[in-house]
Length: 180
Length: 411
Image 1: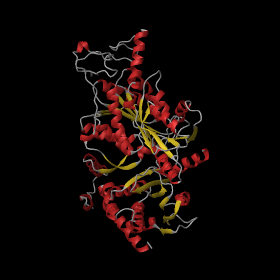
Image 2 (image 1 turned 90 degrees about the vertical axis):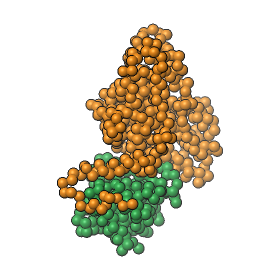
Image 3 (image 1 turned 90 degrees about the horizontal axis):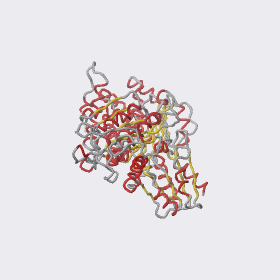
Image 4 (image 1 turned 30 degrees about the vertical axis):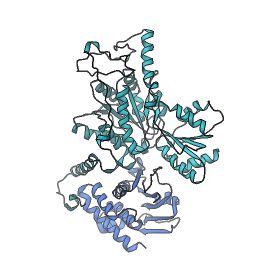
């Protein structure tokens, strides 16, 4: 398969870089080639934040996503900034808790209030990253679901594994229900 | 493969967050030790490369974007009987690793632009005293503190000419996480072999980038250690001229007496003002590099066989260049890439050959022309070849399409 480019975007503190690491690690478990890069810095304490994951079966040269096959946008700012770099055939996933206006509707657009769902079902917005990542994985099938589960267990602190697995399952269920 | 941790859903209420984190970290470290394929950052790969090359002393002052190197070595070195010292600043750091090396340690420090500037005097001292050590510089945008988390290649010339006086330089430049590991080992090996301070340049994006890496088994890792003297102590010369410029090196505490000074010195290490001895010392420093160019220079040549256009790029920019080569080839444009893994000594011969073979050379770089000036130095041999410069210093990467567009505009 050619390069599959994913950009996870939102605001600092939403755990997008962690989500990127988890996704990349799941790809490693699938024995795929992967690169993961991120915007790093003052942005991670407030402003916009992003993590790029490129998954491929070939050698990956340029490590930043430029034409995304999938864009996850958790804030309006991120959505406005990156939407136009989404491929025509790409998948757009937005969190309608924060994204109110969509300048351009992609062919495959999925709109769900991920943050509200996380607060309602799991009691806190902190798992929004895993919830939406699991949704993304189920929709795109870019990594195996079992790999995502294992990757979460290997990456987050042991005390939070159960909570994150719960969020992951919720993400899968939502994709089952609203995907397609 | 269910982790035991997943079933332990209810942790003890008093458990501090730091304790479980350690557990995860240990599992990760275990996987790396077992040489499984793992997701790894460039900086982590540098740290594990240092450990596999036998580095047993680190002194440094943590600085973004190199901090992970110090972080990992702070955990791993004491566990393996090595020493980790957090110093008061970078001047002290370079002095500490030089001193540790004279006492027999394989030593390394890691820093970024501002720290690298401070280290220049110490780097010169390590070079004139021919003391093996390695400085890793994960470059960020400068001058001064610049943009700590943004990518730049502004220290290419500084790594060659940063310290005052004429001195040799060995500088390596990886472009992938795997190569971060390999070139760290090579940097330590070359420092031991050539008795000098070797510099490893990384780009910020590479330092923080994660890729799948499987470290080789230790049996397949080639480690070079300094040659020890075999002569009785009273015959020992710290800078023995009869040893093809690679003379044995005694350590303090082994019974050998030797003098170390930053002043120009004779074979025994004592200061001298004699013109002949000064000339001998300077020649020795120069020749040990120039006589061993073949051993030192490593380049990667990608699709250059039939290329009419060549891209010359190093580090993370070479990754964009490789993508650009693939894209251009699809359009039928005969482009190739020449990438130096050893940036100093500069691969003059390979570049001369490239300039003979192609009509156009494209030099993309994240600075204001530090690489292209070297190409320009060599382009004089062939005045009709065209040079396209792509330069960016705003902290953003040059993308493959940027290169392709500028290349098409230029030809």
